[in-house]
Length: 205
Image 1 (cartoon, rainbow, N blue to C red):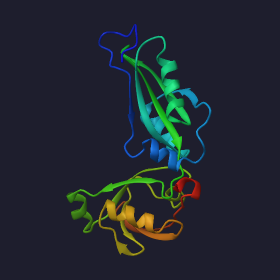
Image 2: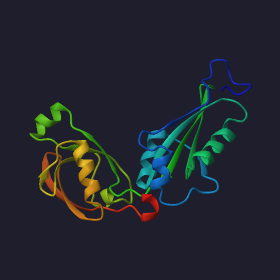
Image 3: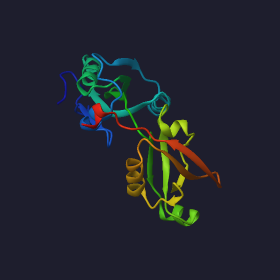
């Protein structure tokens, strides 16, 4: 719904959940209970701020768009409280159309990195299946093992990694254990020992 006073071409207020970080997932995996009020600050650059906060152990849970009006900032902050965000970054209206806010939460992540399936070209280049590491969250097992964005994971405990679903299943099966990942990085092959975390009983339910 468009707030009173918004320009006619302003988009309706909306909140977009980051894939895989819906309310149930956040409630189950968050490191601490939701704060009474989120920490609010002005953002600088959305990609840069996300990289900075990821290094501090935060992941983006959603993004809000608020039609420009006197109450847009208050609406953005109120949304942060509603979704249980730890941090809210607010960006000024672009072309006087909308105010944008990004919402962050610190989660308990047994691995701590995004990963994706390989493309056919990458499989051909590597001569095998596997996954490629995306963003690595600071303070997690992946970060402590010095995994880097762009690494290709070829083997798990010396067994070939087929694809994203199989790698996800292996991570879940070995939570709480030390595992060896065979990595292709910058044309070379290295091994990294990762001590996977576990989900506390309080967040497993």
